[in-house]
Amino acid sequence: MLRFITAGESHGPGLVAMLEGIPAGLPISEAQIRQDLARRQMGYGRGGRMKIETDYAVLQSGVRHGLTMGSPIAMLIENRDHTTGKGPDGKPWTHTMSKNPVEGEVTPIHRLRPGHADTPGISKYLQDDARNILERSSARESAARVAVGAVCRRFLAEFGIEIHSHVVNLGGVRSHAKQPIDWAAVEESPVRCADPVAGDAMMKAIDAAREAGDSLGGTVEIVATGLPIGLGTHIQWDRKLSTRLAAAVASMNAVKGVEFGAGFDSSEVRGSQLHDVIKPIGEWEQNPDGTWRQPWPRCGNNSGGLEGGMTTGEPLIVRAVVKPIATIINPLPTVDLTTGEPDKAHYERSDITFVPSCGVIGEAMVAFTLAEAFLEKFGGDHVEETRRNWKGYMASVGPRAHAAKAKA
Image (cartoon, rainbow, N blue to C red; front, side):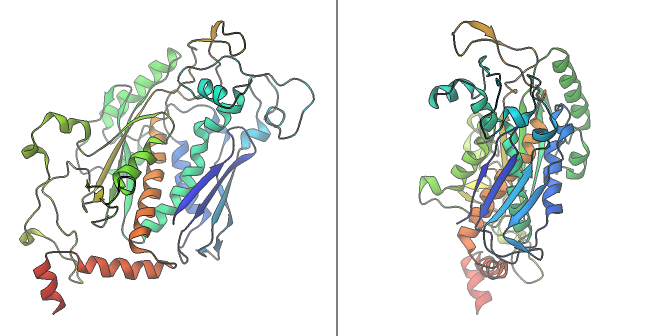
Protein backbone atom coordinates (compact mmCIF):
# COMPACT_ATOMS: atom_id res chain seq x y z
CA MET A 1 0.00 0.00 0.00
CA LEU A 2 1.30 3.43 -0.96
CA ARG A 3 0.33 6.23 1.39
CA PHE A 4 1.57 9.58 2.67
CA ILE A 5 0.83 12.14 5.33
CA THR A 6 2.13 15.64 5.92
CA ALA A 7 2.58 17.78 9.02
CA GLY A 8 3.55 21.35 9.76
CA GLU A 9 2.21 24.90 9.79
CA SER A 10 2.79 27.74 7.37
CA HIS A 11 4.99 29.77 9.74
CA GLY A 12 6.09 26.95 12.01
CA PRO A 13 9.64 25.52 11.99
CA GLY A 14 9.02 23.39 8.91
CA LEU A 15 6.98 20.86 6.99
CA VAL A 16 7.27 17.09 7.24
CA ALA A 17 6.22 14.47 4.69
CA MET A 18 6.16 10.71 5.26
CA LEU A 19 5.80 8.43 2.21
CA GLU A 20 5.41 4.69 2.74
CA GLY A 21 5.23 1.92 0.15
CA ILE A 22 7.82 2.89 -2.47
CA PRO A 23 9.72 -0.29 -3.48
CA ALA A 24 13.42 -0.74 -2.81
CA GLY A 25 15.98 0.01 -5.49
CA LEU A 26 14.58 3.30 -6.80
CA PRO A 27 17.26 5.94 -7.47
CA ILE A 28 16.30 9.16 -5.69
CA SER A 29 18.13 12.30 -4.56
CA GLU A 30 17.43 15.55 -2.76
CA ALA A 31 18.53 17.44 -5.89
CA GLN A 32 15.86 15.73 -7.98
CA ILE A 33 13.17 16.54 -5.40
CA ARG A 34 14.41 20.13 -5.27
CA GLN A 35 13.65 20.56 -8.98
CA ASP A 36 9.93 20.11 -8.42
CA LEU A 37 9.96 22.21 -5.25
CA ALA A 38 11.57 25.05 -7.23
CA ARG A 39 8.90 24.75 -9.92
CA ARG A 40 6.17 25.10 -7.28
CA GLN A 41 7.69 28.38 -6.08
CA MET A 42 7.73 29.98 -9.53
CA GLY A 43 4.94 31.80 -11.32
CA TYR A 44 3.98 35.37 -12.08
CA GLY A 45 1.74 36.74 -9.34
CA ARG A 46 3.39 35.00 -6.41
CA GLY A 47 3.92 36.97 -3.19
CA GLY A 48 6.90 37.91 -1.04
CA ARG A 49 7.03 34.56 0.76
CA MET A 50 8.59 32.92 -2.29
CA LYS A 51 11.48 35.42 -2.10
CA ILE A 52 12.24 34.22 1.42
CA GLU A 53 11.98 30.47 1.04
CA THR A 54 14.30 28.18 -0.88
CA ASP A 55 12.40 24.96 -0.42
CA TYR A 56 14.67 21.96 0.00
CA ALA A 57 13.50 18.56 1.21
CA VAL A 58 16.09 16.86 3.41
CA LEU A 59 15.77 13.08 3.25
CA GLN A 60 15.61 11.82 6.82
CA SER A 61 15.04 8.11 6.21
CA GLY A 62 14.28 5.44 3.62
CA VAL A 63 17.21 6.16 1.26
CA ARG A 64 20.75 4.78 1.45
CA HIS A 65 23.52 5.39 -1.06
CA GLY A 66 21.04 7.02 -3.43
CA LEU A 67 18.57 4.11 -3.51
CA THR A 68 15.31 3.55 -1.66
CA MET A 69 15.36 0.70 0.85
CA GLY A 70 11.63 -0.09 0.88
CA SER A 71 11.18 1.55 4.27
CA PRO A 72 9.22 4.79 4.88
CA ILE A 73 10.74 7.88 3.29
CA ALA A 74 10.67 10.88 5.62
CA MET A 75 11.42 14.40 4.35
CA LEU A 76 11.84 17.71 6.19
CA ILE A 77 11.39 21.12 4.55
CA GLU A 78 12.56 24.05 6.64
CA ASN A 79 10.44 27.21 6.81
CA ARG A 80 13.09 29.94 6.66
CA ASP A 81 10.45 32.58 7.37
CA HIS A 82 9.99 31.01 10.83
CA THR A 83 13.46 32.06 11.95
CA THR A 84 14.11 35.12 9.77
CA GLY A 85 10.73 36.81 9.34
CA LYS A 86 8.19 38.69 11.40
CA GLY A 87 4.42 38.41 11.56
CA PRO A 88 1.89 41.16 10.84
CA ASP A 89 2.14 42.34 14.47
CA GLY A 90 5.90 42.90 14.07
CA LYS A 91 6.88 40.00 16.34
CA PRO A 92 9.16 37.17 15.15
CA TRP A 93 7.42 34.01 14.02
CA THR A 94 9.51 32.14 16.59
CA HIS A 95 7.45 34.03 19.18
CA THR A 96 4.08 33.97 17.39
CA MET A 97 4.34 30.27 16.53
CA SER A 98 6.29 29.08 19.56
CA LYS A 99 5.41 25.56 20.69
CA ASN A 100 5.98 26.64 24.29
CA PRO A 101 4.07 29.24 26.32
CA VAL A 102 5.42 32.76 25.71
CA GLU A 103 5.57 35.94 27.72
CA GLY A 104 3.68 38.91 26.41
CA GLU A 105 0.61 39.09 24.23
CA VAL A 106 0.34 37.33 20.91
CA THR A 107 -2.12 39.25 18.76
CA PRO A 108 -5.03 36.93 17.90
CA ILE A 109 -6.79 36.96 14.54
CA HIS A 110 -10.48 37.77 15.01
CA ARG A 111 -11.36 39.20 11.58
CA LEU A 112 -12.51 36.13 9.66
CA ARG A 113 -11.74 35.85 5.93
CA PRO A 114 -14.58 34.88 3.59
CA GLY A 115 -13.51 32.01 1.36
CA HIS A 116 -10.88 30.66 3.76
CA ALA A 117 -11.03 27.87 6.34
CA ASP A 118 -11.23 30.42 9.17
CA THR A 119 -14.94 30.39 9.98
CA PRO A 120 -15.75 26.66 9.81
CA GLY A 121 -12.37 25.88 11.42
CA ILE A 122 -12.78 28.03 14.53
CA SER A 123 -16.30 26.68 14.94
CA LYS A 124 -15.31 23.02 14.59
CA TYR A 125 -12.19 23.19 16.78
CA LEU A 126 -13.53 25.74 19.31
CA GLN A 127 -10.71 28.22 18.74
CA ASP A 128 -10.51 31.86 19.84
CA ASP A 129 -7.75 32.68 17.37
CA ALA A 130 -8.07 31.98 13.63
CA ARG A 131 -4.27 31.64 13.52
CA ASN A 132 -4.74 28.08 14.78
CA ILE A 133 -6.75 27.33 11.64
CA LEU A 134 -5.06 29.31 8.90
CA GLU A 135 -1.54 28.08 9.69
CA ARG A 136 -2.41 24.49 8.79
CA SER A 137 -4.97 25.25 6.09
CA SER A 138 -2.46 27.45 4.26
CA ALA A 139 -1.33 26.38 0.78
CA ARG A 140 2.19 26.32 2.20
CA GLU A 141 1.44 22.67 3.08
CA SER A 142 1.53 21.88 -0.63
CA ALA A 143 5.34 22.01 -0.58
CA ALA A 144 5.30 18.72 1.34
CA ARG A 145 2.93 17.23 -1.22
CA VAL A 146 5.22 18.26 -4.07
CA ALA A 147 8.15 16.55 -2.34
CA VAL A 148 6.10 13.35 -2.12
CA GLY A 149 5.02 13.74 -5.73
CA ALA A 150 8.64 14.12 -6.85
CA VAL A 151 9.47 10.67 -5.46
CA CYS A 152 6.37 9.17 -7.10
CA ARG A 153 7.25 10.88 -10.39
CA ARG A 154 10.69 9.28 -10.26
CA PHE A 155 9.11 5.87 -9.68
CA LEU A 156 6.71 6.26 -12.62
CA ALA A 157 9.56 7.39 -14.87
CA GLU A 158 11.05 3.90 -14.53
CA PHE A 159 8.10 2.72 -16.65
CA GLY A 160 8.10 5.53 -19.21
CA ILE A 161 5.32 7.54 -17.56
CA GLU A 162 5.60 11.34 -17.68
CA ILE A 163 3.42 13.99 -16.01
CA HIS A 164 3.16 17.64 -17.06
CA SER A 165 0.84 20.57 -16.50
CA HIS A 166 -0.08 23.91 -18.03
CA VAL A 167 -2.45 26.80 -17.37
CA VAL A 168 -5.45 26.89 -19.71
CA ASN A 169 -7.27 29.81 -18.08
CA LEU A 170 -6.19 32.55 -15.69
CA GLY A 171 -8.48 35.35 -14.66
CA GLY A 172 -10.73 34.71 -17.65
CA VAL A 173 -7.87 34.75 -20.17
CA ARG A 174 -7.90 31.43 -22.03
CA SER A 175 -5.06 29.60 -23.72
CA HIS A 176 -5.54 28.49 -27.32
CA ALA A 177 -2.51 26.21 -27.41
CA LYS A 178 -2.83 23.23 -29.74
CA GLN A 179 -1.82 19.63 -29.11
CA PRO A 180 0.86 18.45 -28.75
CA ILE A 181 1.87 20.87 -25.99
CA ASP A 182 5.44 22.20 -26.04
CA TRP A 183 6.32 21.35 -22.44
CA ALA A 184 9.70 23.07 -22.62
CA ALA A 185 7.94 26.32 -23.55
CA VAL A 186 5.53 25.86 -20.64
CA GLU A 187 8.43 25.59 -18.19
CA GLU A 188 9.84 28.86 -19.57
CA SER A 189 6.53 30.73 -19.33
CA PRO A 190 6.09 32.93 -16.20
CA VAL A 191 2.48 31.72 -15.99
CA ARG A 192 3.09 28.16 -17.26
CA CYS A 193 0.99 28.82 -20.37
CA ALA A 194 1.71 27.07 -23.69
CA ASP A 195 0.12 29.96 -25.64
CA PRO A 196 2.56 32.92 -25.54
CA VAL A 197 -0.08 35.47 -26.57
CA ALA A 198 -2.46 34.30 -23.85
CA GLY A 199 0.46 34.16 -21.41
CA ASP A 200 1.19 37.85 -21.93
CA ALA A 201 -2.49 38.69 -21.45
CA MET A 202 -2.56 36.62 -18.25
CA MET A 203 0.33 38.62 -16.82
CA LYS A 204 -1.49 41.87 -17.64
CA ALA A 205 -4.58 40.53 -15.87
CA ILE A 206 -2.46 39.75 -12.81
CA ASP A 207 -0.99 43.27 -12.86
CA ALA A 208 -4.49 44.74 -13.03
CA ALA A 209 -5.68 42.60 -10.12
CA ARG A 210 -2.65 43.63 -8.07
CA GLU A 211 -3.39 47.29 -8.79
CA ALA A 212 -6.97 46.76 -7.63
CA GLY A 213 -5.86 44.89 -4.50
CA ASP A 214 -7.64 41.75 -5.69
CA SER A 215 -6.86 38.11 -6.58
CA LEU A 216 -7.40 35.78 -9.56
CA GLY A 217 -8.28 32.14 -10.14
CA GLY A 218 -8.08 29.93 -13.20
CA THR A 219 -7.86 26.41 -14.59
CA VAL A 220 -4.88 24.06 -14.87
CA GLU A 221 -4.57 20.92 -16.96
CA ILE A 222 -2.47 17.93 -15.87
CA VAL A 223 -1.43 15.41 -18.53
CA ALA A 224 0.09 11.96 -17.88
CA THR A 225 1.46 9.93 -20.81
CA GLY A 226 2.84 6.40 -21.11
CA LEU A 227 0.24 4.82 -18.84
CA PRO A 228 -0.61 1.14 -19.35
CA ILE A 229 -4.19 0.20 -20.05
CA GLY A 230 -6.08 -1.10 -17.01
CA LEU A 231 -4.88 0.88 -13.97
CA GLY A 232 -7.75 1.20 -11.52
CA THR A 233 -10.88 -0.96 -11.54
CA HIS A 234 -14.60 -0.89 -12.21
CA ILE A 235 -15.31 -3.29 -9.33
CA GLN A 236 -16.08 -0.83 -6.52
CA TRP A 237 -16.94 2.88 -6.56
CA ASP A 238 -14.14 3.91 -4.22
CA ARG A 239 -11.45 1.95 -6.11
CA LYS A 240 -12.16 3.54 -9.47
CA LEU A 241 -9.16 5.54 -10.60
CA SER A 242 -11.46 8.37 -11.64
CA THR A 243 -12.80 8.52 -8.08
CA ARG A 244 -9.33 8.60 -6.55
CA LEU A 245 -7.92 11.12 -9.00
CA ALA A 246 -10.90 13.44 -8.53
CA ALA A 247 -10.48 13.27 -4.74
CA ALA A 248 -6.72 13.82 -4.91
CA VAL A 249 -6.97 16.85 -7.18
CA ALA A 250 -9.98 18.30 -5.32
CA SER A 251 -7.98 18.06 -2.06
CA MET A 252 -5.72 20.88 -3.28
CA ASN A 253 -6.28 24.32 -1.78
CA ALA A 254 -8.85 26.47 -3.62
CA VAL A 255 -9.88 23.75 -6.12
CA LYS A 256 -13.62 23.94 -6.81
CA GLY A 257 -14.03 21.63 -9.78
CA VAL A 258 -12.37 18.64 -11.48
CA GLU A 259 -12.99 17.22 -14.96
CA PHE A 260 -11.47 14.57 -17.24
CA GLY A 261 -11.03 14.89 -21.00
CA ALA A 262 -13.99 16.63 -22.60
CA GLY A 263 -15.40 16.98 -19.09
CA PHE A 264 -18.46 19.18 -18.68
CA ASP A 265 -18.61 19.83 -22.44
CA SER A 266 -19.59 16.17 -22.84
CA SER A 267 -23.15 17.12 -21.90
CA GLU A 268 -23.53 19.24 -25.03
CA VAL A 269 -22.85 16.66 -27.78
CA ARG A 270 -24.27 13.32 -28.93
CA GLY A 271 -22.64 10.04 -28.00
CA SER A 272 -21.67 9.41 -31.61
CA GLN A 273 -19.59 12.57 -31.52
CA LEU A 274 -18.05 11.94 -28.12
CA HIS A 275 -16.92 8.36 -27.59
CA ASP A 276 -13.38 7.40 -28.62
CA VAL A 277 -13.44 4.87 -31.47
CA ILE A 278 -10.95 1.97 -31.16
CA LYS A 279 -8.50 1.52 -34.04
CA PRO A 280 -8.23 -1.85 -35.84
CA ILE A 281 -5.10 -3.91 -35.28
CA GLY A 282 -3.66 -2.91 -38.66
CA GLU A 283 -3.15 0.60 -37.28
CA TRP A 284 -1.41 -0.47 -34.06
CA GLU A 285 2.29 0.21 -33.51
CA GLN A 286 4.73 -2.33 -32.07
CA ASN A 287 7.84 -1.95 -29.92
CA PRO A 288 11.11 -3.64 -31.00
CA ASP A 289 10.36 -6.55 -28.63
CA GLY A 290 7.04 -7.26 -30.35
CA THR A 291 4.81 -5.79 -27.65
CA TRP A 292 2.25 -3.16 -28.57
CA ARG A 293 3.36 0.43 -28.13
CA GLN A 294 -0.19 1.15 -27.03
CA PRO A 295 -2.72 -1.69 -27.07
CA TRP A 296 -6.26 -0.80 -28.12
CA PRO A 297 -5.40 2.73 -29.36
CA ARG A 298 -8.17 5.26 -30.00
CA CYS A 299 -9.04 7.74 -32.72
CA GLY A 300 -9.62 10.43 -30.08
CA ASN A 301 -9.36 11.06 -26.35
CA ASN A 302 -12.54 12.76 -25.18
CA SER A 303 -12.56 10.33 -22.24
CA GLY A 304 -9.34 11.87 -20.95
CA GLY A 305 -7.74 8.43 -20.76
CA LEU A 306 -10.32 6.93 -18.39
CA GLU A 307 -13.21 4.54 -19.01
CA GLY A 308 -15.10 2.71 -16.27
CA GLY A 309 -12.65 3.97 -13.66
CA MET A 310 -9.66 2.47 -15.53
CA THR A 311 -6.93 3.88 -17.77
CA THR A 312 -7.37 3.34 -21.52
CA GLY A 313 -3.70 3.79 -22.44
CA GLU A 314 -4.39 7.20 -23.98
CA PRO A 315 -2.98 10.28 -22.21
CA LEU A 316 -4.68 10.99 -18.88
CA ILE A 317 -6.07 14.53 -18.96
CA VAL A 318 -7.30 16.11 -15.71
CA ARG A 319 -8.33 19.73 -15.23
CA ALA A 320 -8.78 21.59 -11.97
CA VAL A 321 -10.71 24.82 -11.48
CA VAL A 322 -8.96 27.05 -8.93
CA LYS A 323 -10.88 29.87 -7.24
CA PRO A 324 -9.22 33.24 -6.51
CA ILE A 325 -7.13 33.34 -3.33
CA ALA A 326 -9.19 34.24 -0.24
CA THR A 327 -6.56 36.54 1.30
CA ILE A 328 -6.69 39.74 -0.76
CA ILE A 329 -4.97 43.09 -0.42
CA ASN A 330 -8.26 45.02 -0.41
CA PRO A 331 -10.06 43.04 2.32
CA LEU A 332 -13.68 42.00 2.02
CA PRO A 333 -16.31 42.94 4.62
CA THR A 334 -16.55 40.38 7.41
CA VAL A 335 -17.38 40.05 11.09
CA ASP A 336 -15.30 39.93 14.25
CA LEU A 337 -14.92 36.46 15.79
CA THR A 338 -15.50 37.78 19.33
CA THR A 339 -18.28 40.31 18.86
CA GLY A 340 -19.95 39.30 15.59
CA GLU A 341 -19.86 42.97 14.58
CA PRO A 342 -18.94 44.18 11.07
CA ASP A 343 -15.25 44.56 10.27
CA LYS A 344 -12.71 44.14 7.45
CA ALA A 345 -11.18 40.71 6.82
CA HIS A 346 -7.69 39.96 8.09
CA TYR A 347 -4.93 40.47 5.52
CA GLU A 348 -1.60 38.73 5.63
CA ARG A 349 1.07 38.71 2.95
CA SER A 350 -0.37 36.77 0.01
CA ASP A 351 -0.13 35.97 -3.68
CA ILE A 352 -2.27 37.65 -6.33
CA THR A 353 -2.66 34.21 -7.88
CA PHE A 354 -1.08 30.81 -7.44
CA VAL A 355 -2.75 29.15 -10.43
CA PRO A 356 0.60 28.35 -12.15
CA SER A 357 1.81 26.68 -8.94
CA CYS A 358 -1.42 24.68 -8.75
CA GLY A 359 -0.37 22.89 -11.92
CA VAL A 360 2.80 21.65 -10.22
CA ILE A 361 0.87 20.67 -7.09
CA GLY A 362 -1.66 18.89 -9.31
CA GLU A 363 1.17 16.96 -10.97
CA ALA A 364 2.25 15.77 -7.52
CA MET A 365 -1.23 14.58 -6.53
CA VAL A 366 -1.71 12.82 -9.86
CA ALA A 367 1.76 11.25 -9.60
CA PHE A 368 0.98 9.86 -6.15
CA THR A 369 -2.41 8.49 -7.22
CA LEU A 370 -1.00 6.86 -10.36
CA ALA A 371 1.95 5.37 -8.45
CA GLU A 372 -0.52 3.97 -5.92
CA ALA A 373 -2.62 2.38 -8.68
CA PHE A 374 0.49 1.11 -10.50
CA LEU A 375 1.76 -0.66 -7.39
CA GLU A 376 -1.68 -2.14 -6.71
CA LYS A 377 -1.65 -3.61 -10.20
CA PHE A 378 1.97 -4.78 -10.43
CA GLY A 379 3.20 -4.98 -6.82
CA GLY A 380 6.83 -5.68 -6.01
CA ASP A 381 9.05 -5.07 -3.00
CA HIS A 382 11.89 -4.10 -5.35
CA VAL A 383 11.62 -2.00 -8.51
CA GLU A 384 12.93 -4.89 -10.61
CA GLU A 385 10.15 -7.16 -9.37
CA THR A 386 7.62 -4.49 -10.33
CA ARG A 387 9.26 -4.21 -13.73
CA ARG A 388 9.00 -7.97 -14.40
CA ASN A 389 5.33 -7.96 -13.49
CA TRP A 390 4.67 -4.94 -15.68
CA LYS A 391 6.47 -6.43 -18.68
CA GLY A 392 4.59 -9.72 -18.33
CA TYR A 393 1.27 -7.92 -18.26
CA MET A 394 2.07 -5.68 -21.22
CA ALA A 395 3.06 -8.73 -23.28
CA SER A 396 -0.37 -10.27 -22.61
CA VAL A 397 -2.48 -7.27 -23.61
CA GLY A 398 -4.02 -7.29 -27.10
CA PRO A 399 -6.47 -9.22 -29.30
CA ARG A 400 -6.91 -12.74 -27.92
CA ALA A 401 -6.19 -14.49 -31.25
CA HIS A 402 -3.00 -12.50 -31.74
CA ALA A 403 -1.84 -13.21 -28.17
CA ALA A 404 -2.49 -16.95 -28.59
CA LYS A 405 -0.56 -16.99 -31.87
CA ALA A 406 2.39 -15.16 -30.31
CA LYS A 407 2.42 -17.61 -27.37
CA ALA A 408 2.42 -20.62 -29.69
